[in-house]
Structure formats: C-alpha cells, structure tokens
Amino acid sequence: MKVFFPTDQHLHHPPFEIFEFGQHIQYYESPNRFDNVITAIKEECRFELLPAENFGIEPILRVHSPEYVNFLRTIYRDWLLADEDMPDGSGLYPTTRPHHIVSTKGKGLSARLGTYVTDLSAPIHENTYIAALSSAHSALSAAKSLTEGALIAAAACRPPGHHAGKQSAAGYCYLNNTSIAANWLSKFGKVAILDIDYHAGNGSQEIFYDRADVLTISLHADPSEEYPYYQGFADETGQGAGEGFHHNFPLPKGCGKEEYLEAFEKALELVKQYAPAYIVVAAGFDTYKSDPLGTFQLSGKTYSTLGKMIKELDIPTSVNLEGGYYIPKLGTNFVKFLKSWLD
Ligand code: SP5
Ligand code: ZN
Image (cartoon, rainbow, N blue to C red; front, top):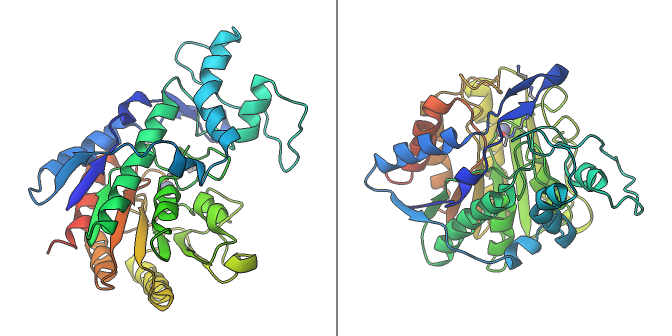
C-alpha cells in the first residue's frame, strides 16, 4: 500500500492556540503527530512510504477561491512588510470575524485575517501556506493511485483539512485536503467522502453541499455540544442538485463502540446505495478513548473493524489523515485502520 506524506509539513508549527476562556495552550496539531504516524508506518513493511507528488495549484483552485488562496500565501509577508506588531513567533490570529457581511471596503490586514480565518485554532505563520499545500498534494497523490488501479492508498496529511471551507481556515485546517482529492477524483466518476473525525466535516459539507456527484457523509460528536458548533446537524441534507447527497450522524458525547458502529453501518449503507467509483475517507482518530479533545470511547481494535467494513464494499478508497491528538497512539491507530486492507 502506498502511503504519501507531505514533505513540508514541519514548516507549520504554531506554538499555541487560544482555547476556551482565552487560555493559551500548546498547539495540539503539532509536528509530533506526524512523527508518530511516520514511525508507525515505517514499522510495517507492506507500506510504501512516498513523498507527495506536486500537482500544482490548479486542483486547489477548483475547491478554494483564488482570493482565499492568495490570502493564505501573502498575509504573513504583508503583515511583516507593513511593520505591524507581532510578538516573536506568535503568528497571526484574527481579532475580528465578520459574520455574513463581508465589507468590500475593508482591505486592511486585520480585515483580511478576520474575513478568512474563522476561529482561534488556525493561526497563520510564515510557512503555513507551504505546509498546507504539501498536505493537499499528499491527498491528491493518494487519490491518483486509485485512478492507476490501486484499491487502497493513504496520505499522512498534516495540517488536516476537513474544517477548511471554500474560503475559510478553521480548526487547524487551511486547505481541505479531502475535498481537493475528492473533487479531483470526481472527473473520473462519482465519489463518496466518509468523514470519521470526531468533529463534523463542515468544510467538506460546505464545499459539496449543492453537488450530487460527490456524496458527503460525516459521523461526529453532536455539534450542539462540540466544535464546530454551527454545523453538522442531522437535518442538513444538501441543497439544490445536492439535496439528499449530504448526511450527518451527530452522536452523543461519550459515544462508545456499539452506538458508533450502528451509525457507521447506516453510513456505509448510504455509500453502497450511491455506488461511487471512489471513496475518500477523512480519517480522524480523535474518536479514540484517550483523546484530549474528544469524548468518544473507541479503541484501536475498532479502527480495524471500521477499515474492514469499508474494505468489504470493494470500492477503491483513499484515506487522508485528519485529527487525532492522543499522540502516543495516533500512528498505531492509523496503521490499524489501514492494515484492514492488507489482511
Ligand atoms: C481537524 C480537527 O480535529 N480539528 C479540531 C479543532 C478543534 N478546535 C478546538 C475546539 C475547542 C474544544 N474544546 C474542548 C474542551 C476539552 N476540555
Ligand atoms: Zn477532529
């Protein structure tokens, strides 16, 4: 099995995020996550670890607006050039967030930050854009393997992507790796995105909400209680041509294996009915029992079960790493999931 990795992920390493009550805490989405994953991948000789191929900017611009991509590329440099204040190594956090109304008058740096960054867990640093690009390219590389005949391929994406919208960074995400890969694959046939991260895949939901050629399904903690709070409810089912092609499975805090598998079976039934040519999994492991950001109670064994159940559909599948913050077990959980296709 080919597992692609983003060559520039290490360039993005924010020192902190701003948590509830304004606490500055260590950035959960750290390069240590990636190191743990790569170590685990290297221990299994049936994985072939490969650097991401460069697909250029075009497949990214088919998902994200040019203004937003340009913002990611330039804001840090422009901030420095403008000689604006920034404590050493802090990175850029928005101080305003215009909801719905985005003024066409405000072209200043703070206006740009507030326009495109939705929350305080997606700071922009000097090389954030470069790291995010390489993460997207790793997802594209895995997708490409499927068109070359692979039944399974994976990408150790970092930074993750599923909270990034057409023009918004949020929740550790800048470019929506999974959506970029799914959109690229959609040229070759119908695609289903299956999002099993603890948090709702709101970015992917937004991106494909009015499309019938990419089915989006997300299983996650009920957004009434958990990030991203405003999206991921069961009655959000798509619109226009996309009506009926989005499904959310909000699950209660503390959800265990039984209840999770029940929802997962329903989700797979929907995938089966849709009969896609490809599946793209947004694979977050923050559903793990020890995850510091999650409350679900899944064990490593459950990830093998989930992998096997997807494998049984016999549809070419690419797996992109999303969240997962209990670092000591992140790599083994990812590997347990992937090994389902090898056994
Ligand atoms: C890709 C991904 O998994 N992003 C997750 C972003 C979560 N952002 C933090 C939200 C605040 C969570 N509050 C949890 C309180 C734990 N005591
Ligand atoms: Zn998550």
